[in-house]
Image (cartoon, rainbow, N blue to C red; front, side, top):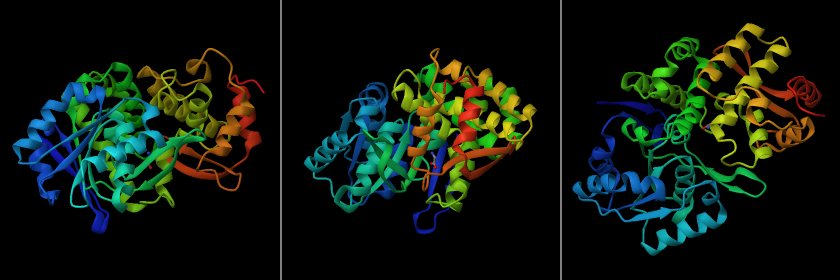
Length: 370
Ligand code: GLY
């Protein structure tokens, strides 16, 4: 059982297939995109141990040679060193332009393997098989690929669209509850930014989605991907509307930077708190009602996600360092702070000229020290 969601990008258009049992169909679904009968699978040790044999069987059954390049799990792999190591191993496989890379894992593998595909021999095709909820509903769709540097996350990268995305809901059954909740933050994001009816549905059905009840999960993932596909098709390079997908991210990235980008605060958890903060900031500026901000927070909290600075860490955050991180965000232009703010639930907009002083006052009211 599966459905296909088109990403309408002209010559670079592709399908995102969402459903069950897709790992077993991967070989037959990928084979039409392969010129020589060979793909290189890039995965991490965790995903590979759980699902590697199944994917390899499927690829080989379709007549594809499928050597694997397995990298260490974790954000530190998404680095210049990780990229150099991966590129060298792809070169050692004598992969050429007619071959294809399969990125099989969560956001780290998708971003790293996608960026390697963007620059390997000036660019080769790749397919995404995302294995986390976050990667299925967000990072595997839309062609953003990148690595981190010590100066910040995702600062070196390229837009490189995949040829196909296979989002197999079965693989989510091995995801930890915490990873599931973190991915769910990006699902709520779609409701909050542009689909009030979906937000209302999530208010009622979050428990079923998080429990991976098949129908609820399929609806939540499918609707999220539909929205992402539609936004990306309209604004591939983030000149306008695609920026809405960054709801919660300016606050969130600052919190991640302060907590060290690791286990202490997962990206999705940071986005969750960031979205609640963005709605409360919007309310404080008279842009949306306090009631809408409270409902946004309640829906996020109901999923066991943080909504306040105190939820994120017991220690106090400093307003100054948080705003400094925001000013370094790659979406900040000419020193002006960019935020995604809201007029109502399901009605977010891009605010490109937000006053740092207003943010500091707001953060102080939220419990940050000066
Ligand atoms: N994750 C935000 C985007 O793809 O634009």
